[in-house]
Every structure is written in C-alpha cells, then in structure tokens.
Amino acid sequence: MPCNKESSCVYGETLIPPTIEDVQSRNRSKEMKTNKCEIYAVGKNRQGNVRYWCREHQAPAYKGSERLDHCIAANTPIISEQEILRITPAEFAGGVAFWGAVPPIYDTTRYPIDLGIHVHARLVKDGKKVIDKTYKRVIFENNDSKQSSIDTLSAVYYMVSLIFHKVMKVAPCNHCGSLHLDKDWFSVHEHKKHLCSSCGREFYDTGPGIGNPLMAIKQLCGDKEIFRSTVPAKKKRININQTDYPGGIRIWGSNQAIVWTAPKAEESGIHVHGYANNGAIIVDDTFQEVIVDNISLDANEVRIWMAQSAMPHLSDRFTTLSCPHCDKFHCDVDELAYTPHRLHHCEHCKHEFITPGRRKLVISNPMYEIVKILSKNAPRSPQINHGFLRPEV
Image (cartoon, rainbow, N blue to C red; front, side, top):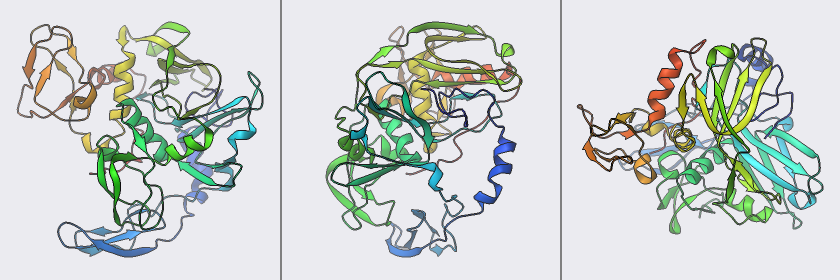
C-alpha cells in the first residue's frame, strides 16, 4: 500500500521522511488552532453525579462530580481542508480501497506516524492509482447525495474488531442520530446499551452489537463483506539484522482493508519498513515470514499484538508465558486474547497451566517479550505510538 511521497504513512514509499522535530516545527502554529469546548449536562452517571459532555470534541468534561473547564480532548487540533478527502466511490470503476493507517507494533525510527485513513482509487481496472494518500477524515458521497464520514479512531477500532472476528453494525444514536463508535473494551464486547460519543447521552440499540460508522461507508461503496478472503504475500521471507538499518525499522501486522472493491485478492502477512541513516527507505514490502536478529516473528501473533496495543484498558495485563510442560511461548487467541485469565491451554502440547506469580489475571502474547528482546539490540529505543488512545470501559 504505497502512499504519497510527501508523508511517512503506513506502507509508504517515502524516500526521506520528516523527523518528529520537523513536523512539530511545521505544525506548531496549527496545533494551537483548536475549537472551543461546548459543554452540556447530559444526565447522571452510576454514582448519581451529573455527567458533563463536550459536543465539540465528543469527550467527557467532568471528574467525579466536578465540571471541568475543558474536556479531556480540548487540545485536539482542527482538521484542515487539505487533510479531508471527499470522494464518490462510484466514479472509480477501477476500484477503491481504504485502510486504517495505524501505528506499527515495533518502531525504532524517529519519524512521525501518519495516522488516519489511507486511500487508493483507480479510474479503470488495473490502471494507475489516481489517489494514493492518507487523510485525517474521508467524506463519502453517493449518487443520492447522502454523506458519511470516517476518522482515525473509526479506522483503528474497525481493525481491532475485525482481528478478533467481531461483527460490526451501524448503531445510530436515538437522540442525535450520530453513528456511534464503540472503542477499546466496547470494540470487542457486544452490548445493547451505548453511550453516544457525539451527544454524551445513553441510548439502547435494537439488539446487542458493536457499533462502527464504517459499516455505513461499506454500504455506500457496495462492499458487503467484513471478513474478506486474503492471499499470502507474494514475498515469502526476509531475514534482517537491525544494525543493517541505522535509520530504524518499522513492523506491522497485515491490516485488512476496510473497503476493497478491486477485482484481485488482498495480500496478508507482516509489513516491514527499513531505513538508511539518511532516512532513505531500503525495505518496504509485505512478507509471509519475517526474521529479525535471528528471531522469527509469527504473522498471527504480530496481528493480534497490533490489535491488543490499541486497547489501553489492557495495557498492564500483557505478558509472555512459557508452558511449564514443553517450555514453548504461549499465545492467547480469540476471546482469551482480550480477556485477562488465570488458566491457560498450551497450543503446542495441550497442557493446561495456571499463571505463575502473584498476578494471575493476564493475557499472554510472545510479542510482548520479543519486542523487549529486539529493543535491547536496537540502534535506539523504540517509539511508543499509541498515546492518542484513551481507555473506554
């Protein structure tokens, strides 16, 4: 998924991406431009305290029983027109595709992550991409002039729900009509009662489910599939050492497209970026198998870790367990991959064992330990790129 050469986004073709300092300097004046909060009382919480909500930034504006002067998202920069794409999918006979540009699971560069929605569009089948860029917001229109829009958080939590095989739905708020997005804990647990992120009021859906506005986008684009079939990456294997890439490396699990209307199948695997000291990109491709510093990465474990890293309410529950019977690393999957638990079932020898130590309720993924090992051999410490996510429980 190559992107425009003016940005350093996921799956990009950037030759010399800007450093974090470059971006901060260029955007310093822009970051000061934020909309003022619009705070309203929208009911009471379980403790009986009045709940205050900012409708401008769609975020809480209270702590306990106290009304805050600003909501917790008050410093969110205004999205400029240059960061917004307006598109009518029917105009692109060659197909359109949209991905959530999410942070890598391992990143030793010093370049900023271009978060948002990455877009490909072709006018004719197998033709050249006329759109190949990442946007902060995408507004979709159809021939009936109906509009829907998506932003970064919708794309991130679509990825989380998809990786954990959760069916999503359109969930409009009964009060304001906004399409509801379930985040963090709610993105992997079906429920009927929702707290609207737009107006801050509670509403009930017709049945249990997980709301994501992107399901409306898929309807507009004529893409009815959620769990789409993919094919293994064409390139089977890459064996690298971190010292060969002084500019750092980045690693992602394959991020299945939100919308895919192209006539060919989408590839899956592990995507790798490797940079030279001057920022030139040396490696930019997807592989079936990736070996870094003689450590083999499992594509499924990388993909699960990418989704787990986007759920901040679990941040202190991850570990890497070894089976006491066969001594192999254990990876929790399916519901156990997002539910802390004490009893584990080894996928290698089928032995059951209990979490050792004082903290019993944990989730095991080998990537938790592998990232630590890779960090020790890295030319510089890895970046933490999930600071924009807030816990939702």
